[in-house]
Length: 422
Ligand SMILES: Cc1cc2nc3c(=O)[nH]c(=O)nc-3n(C[C@H](O)[C@H](O)[C@H](O)COP(=O)(O)OP(=O)(O)OC[C@H]3O[C@@H](n4cnc5c(N)ncnc54)[C@H](O)[C@@H]3O)c2cc1C
Image (tube, rainbow, N blue to C red):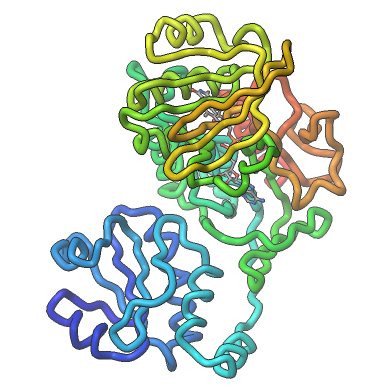
Protein backbone atom coordinates (compact mmCIF):
# COMPACT_ATOMS: atom_id res chain seq x y z
CA UNK A 1 0.00 0.00 0.00
CA UNK A 2 1.36 3.42 -0.92
CA UNK A 3 0.38 7.06 -0.43
CA UNK A 4 0.52 9.21 -3.57
CA UNK A 5 -0.06 12.85 -4.45
CA UNK A 6 -1.47 14.57 -7.54
CA UNK A 7 1.90 14.72 -9.33
CA UNK A 8 2.13 10.91 -9.23
CA UNK A 9 -1.43 10.24 -10.40
CA UNK A 10 -0.45 9.78 -14.04
CA UNK A 11 2.46 7.43 -13.45
CA UNK A 12 1.02 5.50 -10.49
CA UNK A 13 -2.59 5.23 -11.62
CA UNK A 14 -3.14 5.96 -15.31
CA UNK A 15 0.03 4.24 -16.56
CA UNK A 16 0.13 1.47 -14.05
CA UNK A 17 -2.05 -1.56 -14.78
CA UNK A 18 -4.49 -2.58 -12.10
CA UNK A 19 -5.03 -0.06 -9.33
CA UNK A 20 -7.44 0.76 -6.53
CA UNK A 21 -7.24 4.35 -5.28
CA UNK A 22 -8.71 5.51 -1.97
CA UNK A 23 -9.43 9.25 -1.63
CA UNK A 24 -9.50 9.72 2.15
CA UNK A 25 -9.72 12.60 4.61
CA UNK A 26 -8.89 13.10 8.25
CA UNK A 27 -11.65 13.45 10.86
CA UNK A 28 -13.78 11.22 8.65
CA UNK A 29 -15.47 8.29 10.45
CA UNK A 30 -16.35 6.44 7.21
CA UNK A 31 -12.67 6.72 6.17
CA UNK A 32 -11.64 5.21 9.51
CA UNK A 33 -14.13 2.40 8.90
CA UNK A 34 -12.74 1.60 5.45
CA UNK A 35 -9.02 1.84 6.36
CA UNK A 36 -8.61 -1.59 8.05
CA UNK A 37 -10.59 -3.30 5.26
CA UNK A 38 -8.38 -1.63 2.63
CA UNK A 39 -5.22 -2.68 4.43
CA UNK A 40 -6.41 -6.26 4.95
CA UNK A 41 -7.39 -6.59 1.29
CA UNK A 42 -4.08 -5.11 0.14
CA UNK A 43 -2.38 -8.08 1.82
CA UNK A 44 -4.62 -10.48 -0.09
CA UNK A 45 -4.73 -8.81 -3.51
CA UNK A 46 -1.46 -6.84 -3.35
CA UNK A 47 0.43 -9.08 -5.82
CA UNK A 48 -2.15 -8.44 -8.55
CA UNK A 49 -3.48 -4.96 -7.80
CA UNK A 50 -1.75 -1.80 -6.60
CA UNK A 51 -3.38 -0.32 -3.48
CA UNK A 52 -2.97 3.46 -3.35
CA UNK A 53 -4.21 6.15 -0.99
CA UNK A 54 -4.47 9.86 -1.66
CA UNK A 55 -5.25 12.57 0.91
CA UNK A 56 -8.24 14.38 -0.57
CA UNK A 57 -7.86 17.62 1.40
CA UNK A 58 -4.36 18.18 -0.05
CA UNK A 59 -5.27 17.01 -3.56
CA UNK A 60 -8.55 18.82 -4.02
CA UNK A 61 -7.98 19.89 -7.61
CA UNK A 62 -7.45 16.29 -8.74
CA UNK A 63 -10.45 15.13 -6.69
CA UNK A 64 -12.65 17.81 -8.33
CA UNK A 65 -11.33 16.91 -11.78
CA UNK A 66 -12.23 13.25 -11.17
CA UNK A 67 -15.63 14.18 -9.74
CA UNK A 68 -14.75 12.85 -6.28
CA UNK A 69 -17.09 14.71 -3.95
CA UNK A 70 -16.80 12.86 -0.64
CA UNK A 71 -14.39 10.82 1.45
CA UNK A 72 -13.77 8.00 1.29
CA UNK A 73 -14.18 7.38 -2.44
CA UNK A 74 -12.60 4.24 -3.89
CA UNK A 75 -11.86 4.17 -7.62
CA UNK A 76 -10.75 1.10 -9.57
CA UNK A 77 -8.54 1.31 -12.68
CA UNK A 78 -7.54 -1.22 -15.29
CA UNK A 79 -4.74 0.13 -17.52
CA UNK A 80 -5.77 3.74 -16.99
CA UNK A 81 -9.49 3.10 -17.52
CA UNK A 82 -11.83 3.39 -14.56
CA UNK A 83 -13.88 0.20 -14.06
CA UNK A 84 -16.52 -1.09 -11.63
CA UNK A 85 -18.46 1.09 -9.22
CA UNK A 86 -17.12 4.02 -7.26
CA UNK A 87 -17.56 3.20 -3.59
CA UNK A 88 -18.36 5.94 -1.08
CA UNK A 89 -19.78 6.31 2.45
CA UNK A 90 -20.05 3.20 4.60
CA UNK A 91 -18.09 0.98 2.23
CA UNK A 92 -18.37 -2.75 2.92
CA UNK A 93 -15.57 -5.28 2.51
CA UNK A 94 -17.74 -7.36 0.18
CA UNK A 95 -18.26 -4.36 -2.14
CA UNK A 96 -14.51 -3.78 -2.39
CA UNK A 97 -13.91 -7.47 -3.12
CA UNK A 98 -16.57 -7.41 -5.86
CA UNK A 99 -14.75 -4.55 -7.62
CA UNK A 100 -11.27 -6.00 -7.10
CA UNK A 101 -12.42 -9.27 -8.63
CA UNK A 102 -13.30 -7.40 -11.84
CA UNK A 103 -9.59 -6.69 -12.27
CA UNK A 104 -8.29 -10.26 -12.07
CA UNK A 105 -8.85 -13.61 -13.77
CA UNK A 106 -11.27 -16.22 -12.44
CA UNK A 107 -8.35 -18.44 -11.52
CA UNK A 108 -6.59 -15.74 -9.47
CA UNK A 109 -9.90 -14.87 -7.89
CA UNK A 110 -10.40 -18.39 -6.54
CA UNK A 111 -6.73 -18.63 -5.49
CA UNK A 112 -7.00 -15.37 -3.54
CA UNK A 113 -10.34 -16.24 -1.97
CA UNK A 114 -8.96 -19.60 -0.84
CA UNK A 115 -6.18 -17.68 0.94
CA UNK A 116 -8.64 -15.86 3.18
CA UNK A 117 -7.92 -17.16 6.67
CA UNK A 118 -10.75 -17.09 9.20
CA UNK A 119 -9.86 -15.07 12.30
CA UNK A 120 -11.34 -14.92 15.79
CA UNK A 121 -11.45 -11.87 18.03
CA UNK A 122 -12.50 -11.83 21.69
CA UNK A 123 -14.28 -9.20 23.76
CA UNK A 124 -16.22 -9.08 27.00
CA UNK A 125 -19.30 -7.61 25.33
CA UNK A 126 -20.56 -7.43 21.76
CA UNK A 127 -23.07 -4.69 21.01
CA UNK A 128 -25.00 -5.33 17.82
CA UNK A 129 -26.10 -1.94 16.50
CA UNK A 130 -24.56 1.50 16.92
CA UNK A 131 -27.61 3.72 17.32
CA UNK A 132 -28.24 5.77 20.49
CA UNK A 133 -29.02 2.64 22.55
CA UNK A 134 -25.91 0.72 21.50
CA UNK A 135 -23.63 3.76 21.67
CA UNK A 136 -24.77 4.61 25.20
CA UNK A 137 -24.22 1.03 26.36
CA UNK A 138 -20.77 1.17 24.70
CA UNK A 139 -19.92 4.39 26.53
CA UNK A 140 -20.89 3.10 29.97
CA UNK A 141 -19.13 -0.24 29.44
CA UNK A 142 -15.99 1.45 28.21
CA UNK A 143 -15.91 3.80 31.16
CA UNK A 144 -16.20 0.71 33.39
CA UNK A 145 -13.11 -0.71 31.59
CA UNK A 146 -15.06 -3.53 29.97
CA UNK A 147 -13.65 -4.66 26.64
CA UNK A 148 -16.48 -3.90 24.22
CA UNK A 149 -17.03 -3.94 20.48
CA UNK A 150 -19.86 -2.29 18.56
CA UNK A 151 -20.79 -4.11 15.37
CA UNK A 152 -23.04 -2.34 12.86
CA UNK A 153 -24.09 -3.21 9.33
CA UNK A 154 -23.99 0.53 8.54
CA UNK A 155 -22.03 3.47 9.90
CA UNK A 156 -22.82 4.26 13.54
CA UNK A 157 -25.61 6.69 14.44
CA UNK A 158 -28.77 4.72 13.75
CA UNK A 159 -32.00 6.44 12.86
CA UNK A 160 -30.94 9.72 14.46
CA UNK A 161 -28.31 10.24 11.79
CA UNK A 162 -31.06 10.56 9.17
CA UNK A 163 -33.38 12.74 11.27
CA UNK A 164 -33.18 16.33 10.12
CA UNK A 165 -33.63 17.96 13.52
CA UNK A 166 -33.93 16.75 17.09
CA UNK A 167 -35.47 19.25 19.47
CA UNK A 168 -36.34 17.00 22.39
CA UNK A 169 -32.99 15.53 23.43
CA UNK A 170 -32.09 17.17 26.75
CA UNK A 171 -28.95 19.26 27.08
CA UNK A 172 -29.29 21.33 23.93
CA UNK A 173 -31.08 24.68 23.93
CA UNK A 174 -31.51 24.76 20.15
CA UNK A 175 -32.70 21.91 17.93
CA UNK A 176 -29.76 19.77 16.83
CA UNK A 177 -29.24 18.34 13.34
CA UNK A 178 -29.71 14.58 13.80
CA UNK A 179 -26.44 13.69 12.04
CA UNK A 180 -24.51 15.97 14.45
CA UNK A 181 -26.14 14.52 17.56
CA UNK A 182 -25.42 10.96 16.44
CA UNK A 183 -21.89 11.90 15.33
CA UNK A 184 -21.16 13.33 18.78
CA UNK A 185 -22.58 10.26 20.52
CA UNK A 186 -20.47 7.99 18.34
CA UNK A 187 -17.25 10.01 18.77
CA UNK A 188 -17.73 10.17 22.55
CA UNK A 189 -18.00 6.37 22.75
CA UNK A 190 -15.15 5.79 20.30
CA UNK A 191 -12.80 8.24 22.07
CA UNK A 192 -13.39 6.37 25.31
CA UNK A 193 -11.87 3.30 23.65
CA UNK A 194 -14.75 1.10 22.53
CA UNK A 195 -13.85 -0.92 19.42
CA UNK A 196 -15.91 -0.45 16.25
CA UNK A 197 -16.54 -2.89 13.43
CA UNK A 198 -18.91 -0.93 11.23
CA UNK A 199 -20.23 -1.12 7.67
CA UNK A 200 -19.78 -4.88 7.91
CA UNK A 201 -21.93 -7.76 6.75
CA UNK A 202 -23.26 -9.64 9.74
CA UNK A 203 -23.29 -13.16 8.35
CA UNK A 204 -24.39 -15.14 11.42
CA UNK A 205 -25.32 -14.51 15.04
CA UNK A 206 -25.23 -17.38 17.56
CA UNK A 207 -26.76 -16.00 20.72
CA UNK A 208 -26.25 -19.17 22.73
CA UNK A 209 -22.52 -19.35 21.95
CA UNK A 210 -22.23 -15.52 22.04
CA UNK A 211 -20.59 -15.47 18.61
CA UNK A 212 -21.08 -13.15 15.67
CA UNK A 213 -19.57 -13.85 12.25
CA UNK A 214 -18.84 -10.75 10.21
CA UNK A 215 -17.81 -10.39 6.59
CA UNK A 216 -17.85 -14.19 6.36
CA UNK A 217 -14.35 -14.58 7.81
CA UNK A 218 -14.16 -12.99 11.26
CA UNK A 219 -15.73 -14.65 14.30
CA UNK A 220 -16.25 -12.20 17.14
CA UNK A 221 -16.73 -13.87 20.53
CA UNK A 222 -17.83 -12.40 23.85
CA UNK A 223 -19.24 -13.23 27.27
CA UNK A 224 -22.35 -11.15 26.70
CA UNK A 225 -24.26 -9.67 23.77
CA UNK A 226 -26.41 -6.56 23.68
CA UNK A 227 -28.90 -6.40 20.80
CA UNK A 228 -29.40 -2.76 19.80
CA UNK A 229 -30.44 -3.20 16.20
CA UNK A 230 -33.37 -0.76 16.31
CA UNK A 231 -36.00 -0.51 13.62
CA UNK A 232 -36.33 0.04 9.87
CA UNK A 233 -39.13 1.73 7.93
CA UNK A 234 -42.13 -0.38 7.01
CA UNK A 235 -42.71 -0.87 3.32
CA UNK A 236 -46.04 -0.44 1.52
CA UNK A 237 -45.45 -3.70 -0.41
CA UNK A 238 -47.30 -2.41 -3.46
CA UNK A 239 -46.28 -2.63 -7.14
CA UNK A 240 -43.49 -0.25 -8.10
CA UNK A 241 -42.21 0.32 -4.54
CA UNK A 242 -39.16 -1.95 -4.63
CA UNK A 243 -38.51 -1.14 -8.29
CA UNK A 244 -38.37 2.64 -7.75
CA UNK A 245 -36.73 2.68 -4.31
CA UNK A 246 -34.03 5.33 -4.56
CA UNK A 247 -35.36 6.36 -7.99
CA UNK A 248 -38.40 8.33 -6.88
CA UNK A 249 -39.49 6.38 -3.80
CA UNK A 250 -37.69 7.34 -0.57
CA UNK A 251 -37.87 6.58 3.15
CA UNK A 252 -35.58 9.38 4.33
CA UNK A 253 -36.40 13.09 4.02
CA UNK A 254 -33.04 14.19 5.42
CA UNK A 255 -31.29 12.20 2.72
CA UNK A 256 -33.49 13.00 -0.28
CA UNK A 257 -35.73 16.08 0.25
CA UNK A 258 -32.99 18.29 -1.21
CA UNK A 259 -33.57 16.70 -4.63
CA UNK A 260 -37.12 18.08 -4.76
CA UNK A 261 -36.63 21.84 -4.83
CA UNK A 262 -39.79 23.39 -6.40
CA UNK A 263 -41.14 19.91 -7.15
CA UNK A 264 -44.36 18.12 -6.30
CA UNK A 265 -43.99 15.50 -3.61
CA UNK A 266 -46.31 12.87 -2.15
CA UNK A 267 -45.91 11.81 1.48
CA UNK A 268 -47.59 8.62 2.65
CA UNK A 269 -48.51 8.37 6.33
CA UNK A 270 -50.00 10.53 9.06
CA UNK A 271 -48.16 9.77 12.31
CA UNK A 272 -45.40 11.77 14.00
CA UNK A 273 -42.64 10.81 11.57
CA UNK A 274 -44.78 11.47 8.50
CA UNK A 275 -45.94 14.87 9.74
CA UNK A 276 -42.52 16.02 10.95
CA UNK A 277 -40.78 14.83 7.80
CA UNK A 278 -43.49 16.33 5.55
CA UNK A 279 -42.92 19.66 7.30
CA UNK A 280 -39.20 19.35 6.54
CA UNK A 281 -39.91 18.51 2.88
CA UNK A 282 -41.96 21.74 2.53
CA UNK A 283 -38.67 23.66 2.90
CA UNK A 284 -37.74 22.31 -0.54
CA UNK A 285 -40.83 21.18 -2.44
CA UNK A 286 -43.44 23.31 -4.22
CA UNK A 287 -46.31 21.12 -2.99
CA UNK A 288 -46.67 18.23 -0.57
CA UNK A 289 -49.68 15.95 -0.88
CA UNK A 290 -50.12 13.68 2.11
CA UNK A 291 -52.00 10.42 1.71
CA UNK A 292 -53.42 9.07 4.95
CA UNK A 293 -55.66 6.08 5.52
CA UNK A 294 -57.65 7.56 8.43
CA UNK A 295 -59.91 10.64 8.63
CA UNK A 296 -57.45 12.51 10.80
CA UNK A 297 -53.69 12.66 11.30
CA UNK A 298 -52.34 10.78 14.31
CA UNK A 299 -49.25 12.93 14.97
CA UNK A 300 -48.99 15.21 18.01
CA UNK A 301 -51.28 18.28 17.79
CA UNK A 302 -48.49 20.86 17.70
CA UNK A 303 -46.82 19.22 14.70
CA UNK A 304 -50.18 18.73 12.94
CA UNK A 305 -51.19 22.36 13.37
CA UNK A 306 -47.85 23.56 12.02
CA UNK A 307 -48.09 21.33 8.98
CA UNK A 308 -51.73 21.96 8.16
CA UNK A 309 -51.26 25.75 8.32
CA UNK A 310 -48.65 25.49 5.55
CA UNK A 311 -50.26 26.49 2.20
CA UNK A 312 -47.99 24.05 0.33
CA UNK A 313 -49.63 21.08 2.07
CA UNK A 314 -52.77 19.20 1.10
CA UNK A 315 -53.99 16.00 2.83
CA UNK A 316 -56.00 13.26 1.15
CA UNK A 317 -57.71 11.58 4.10
CA UNK A 318 -59.09 8.06 3.87
CA UNK A 319 -57.02 7.21 0.80
CA UNK A 320 -54.42 4.51 0.25
CA UNK A 321 -51.80 4.14 -2.46
CA UNK A 322 -52.17 1.05 -4.61
CA UNK A 323 -49.19 1.34 -7.00
CA UNK A 324 -46.25 3.53 -7.99
CA UNK A 325 -45.67 3.92 -11.72
CA UNK A 326 -42.85 5.80 -13.40
CA UNK A 327 -43.63 7.97 -16.41
CA UNK A 328 -40.45 9.65 -17.65
CA UNK A 329 -39.26 11.84 -14.75
CA UNK A 330 -42.62 11.70 -13.03
CA UNK A 331 -43.88 9.31 -10.36
CA UNK A 332 -47.53 8.43 -10.72
CA UNK A 333 -49.20 7.37 -7.48
CA UNK A 334 -52.34 5.33 -8.02
CA UNK A 335 -54.61 5.89 -5.02
CA UNK A 336 -57.88 4.43 -3.83
CA UNK A 337 -60.55 6.41 -1.99
CA UNK A 338 -61.34 4.05 0.90
CA UNK A 339 -64.90 5.36 1.24
CA UNK A 340 -66.03 5.36 -2.40
CA UNK A 341 -63.52 2.70 -3.64
CA UNK A 342 -62.87 4.94 -6.66
CA UNK A 343 -59.32 5.08 -8.01
CA UNK A 344 -57.38 8.14 -9.17
CA UNK A 345 -53.82 9.14 -10.08
CA UNK A 346 -51.54 11.75 -8.53
CA UNK A 347 -48.67 12.98 -10.67
CA UNK A 348 -45.64 13.84 -8.57
CA UNK A 349 -41.87 14.09 -8.80
CA UNK A 350 -41.17 11.94 -5.78
CA UNK A 351 -42.80 9.87 -3.05
CA UNK A 352 -41.79 9.56 0.61
CA UNK A 353 -43.13 6.63 2.65
CA UNK A 354 -43.42 7.06 6.44
CA UNK A 355 -45.79 4.35 7.65
CA UNK A 356 -44.15 3.18 10.82
CA UNK A 357 -41.24 0.94 11.62
CA UNK A 358 -40.46 -2.74 12.19
CA UNK A 359 -37.87 -4.30 14.50
CA UNK A 360 -34.56 -5.46 13.00
CA UNK A 361 -34.49 -8.99 14.37
CA UNK A 362 -34.46 -11.21 11.26
CA UNK A 363 -30.98 -12.62 11.83
CA UNK A 364 -31.59 -13.88 15.39
CA UNK A 365 -35.32 -13.93 16.05
CA UNK A 366 -35.75 -17.71 16.30
CA UNK A 367 -34.47 -18.19 19.83
CA UNK A 368 -35.82 -15.01 21.44
CA UNK A 369 -39.15 -14.27 23.09
CA UNK A 370 -41.05 -11.62 21.12
CA UNK A 371 -44.21 -9.63 21.76
CA UNK A 372 -47.13 -9.74 19.31
CA UNK A 373 -45.57 -7.00 17.18
CA UNK A 374 -42.17 -8.65 16.81
CA UNK A 375 -40.26 -6.68 19.47
CA UNK A 376 -37.92 -8.32 22.01
CA UNK A 377 -39.14 -8.94 25.53
CA UNK A 378 -36.70 -8.11 28.32
CA UNK A 379 -36.63 -7.97 32.10
CA UNK A 380 -35.91 -4.79 34.09
CA UNK A 381 -32.15 -5.25 33.55
CA UNK A 382 -32.85 -5.36 29.78
CA UNK A 383 -31.97 -9.08 29.68
CA UNK A 384 -33.83 -11.25 27.17
CA UNK A 385 -35.00 -14.82 27.73
CA UNK A 386 -31.49 -16.01 26.79
CA UNK A 387 -28.98 -15.62 29.66
CA UNK A 388 -26.29 -12.99 28.97
CA UNK A 389 -28.19 -11.63 25.96
CA UNK A 390 -29.60 -8.15 26.47
CA UNK A 391 -31.69 -5.89 24.26
CA UNK A 392 -31.92 -2.10 24.30
CA UNK A 393 -33.58 0.72 22.40
CA UNK A 394 -36.28 0.58 19.75
CA UNK A 395 -35.90 -3.17 19.17
CA UNK A 396 -37.32 -3.77 22.68
CA UNK A 397 -41.02 -4.34 23.41
CA UNK A 398 -42.15 -1.03 24.94
CA UNK A 399 -44.67 1.76 24.63
CA UNK A 400 -42.50 4.72 23.62
CA UNK A 401 -39.57 4.71 21.22
CA UNK A 402 -37.41 7.81 21.48
CA UNK A 403 -33.72 8.64 21.72
CA UNK A 404 -34.12 9.25 25.44
CA UNK A 405 -35.72 5.83 25.99
CA UNK A 406 -33.03 4.11 23.91
CA UNK A 407 -30.17 5.75 25.83
CA UNK A 408 -31.91 4.86 29.09
CA UNK A 409 -32.07 1.19 28.07
CA UNK A 410 -28.41 1.27 27.03
CA UNK A 411 -27.48 2.69 30.42
CA UNK A 412 -29.43 0.02 32.32
CA UNK A 413 -28.01 -2.89 30.32
CA UNK A 414 -24.44 -1.59 30.64
CA UNK A 415 -24.66 -1.06 34.40
CA UNK A 416 -26.26 -4.49 34.90
CA UNK A 417 -23.53 -6.14 32.81
CA UNK A 418 -20.79 -4.22 34.61
CA UNK A 419 -22.05 -5.46 37.97
CA UNK A 420 -22.12 -9.04 36.70
CA UNK A 421 -18.71 -9.00 35.06
CA UNK A 422 -17.08 -7.37 38.07
C1 LIG B 1 -37.71 9.92 10.84
C2 LIG B 1 -37.49 9.76 12.31
C3 LIG B 1 -37.47 10.87 13.14
C4 LIG B 1 -37.26 10.71 14.52
N1 LIG B 1 -37.23 11.83 15.32
C5 LIG B 1 -36.99 11.69 16.65
C6 LIG B 1 -36.90 12.84 17.49
O1 LIG B 1 -37.04 13.99 17.05
N2 LIG B 1 -36.66 12.63 18.82
C7 LIG B 1 -36.50 11.38 19.36
O2 LIG B 1 -36.26 11.26 20.56
N3 LIG B 1 -36.58 10.28 18.58
C8 LIG B 1 -36.82 10.40 17.24
N4 LIG B 1 -36.90 9.28 16.45
C9 LIG B 1 -36.74 7.95 17.09
C10 LIG B 1 -35.26 7.65 17.35
O3 LIG B 1 -34.55 7.81 16.16
C11 LIG B 1 -35.12 6.24 17.88
O4 LIG B 1 -35.90 6.09 19.03
C12 LIG B 1 -33.65 5.89 18.20
O5 LIG B 1 -32.83 6.10 17.10
C13 LIG B 1 -33.55 4.45 18.67
O6 LIG B 1 -32.23 4.12 18.85
P1 LIG B 1 -31.71 2.60 18.76
O7 LIG B 1 -30.28 2.64 19.15
O8 LIG B 1 -32.61 1.72 19.50
O9 LIG B 1 -31.89 2.15 17.24
P2 LIG B 1 -31.52 2.79 15.83
O10 LIG B 1 -31.34 4.24 15.90
O11 LIG B 1 -32.55 2.24 14.91
O12 LIG B 1 -30.10 2.12 15.48
C14 LIG B 1 -29.99 0.75 15.23
C15 LIG B 1 -28.64 0.45 14.62
O13 LIG B 1 -28.52 -0.97 14.44
C16 LIG B 1 -27.95 -1.26 13.18
N5 LIG B 1 -28.38 -2.59 12.78
C17 LIG B 1 -29.55 -3.00 12.23
N6 LIG B 1 -29.55 -4.33 12.00
C18 LIG B 1 -28.34 -4.79 12.41
C19 LIG B 1 -27.71 -6.08 12.46
N7 LIG B 1 -28.34 -7.18 12.02
N8 LIG B 1 -26.48 -6.17 12.94
C20 LIG B 1 -25.81 -5.08 13.38
N9 LIG B 1 -26.34 -3.83 13.38
C21 LIG B 1 -27.58 -3.69 12.90
C22 LIG B 1 -28.46 -0.15 12.28
O14 LIG B 1 -27.61 0.03 11.16
C23 LIG B 1 -28.45 1.06 13.22
O15 LIG B 1 -27.22 1.76 13.18
C24 LIG B 1 -37.08 9.41 15.07
C25 LIG B 1 -37.09 8.30 14.23
C26 LIG B 1 -37.28 8.47 12.86
C27 LIG B 1 -37.28 7.25 11.98
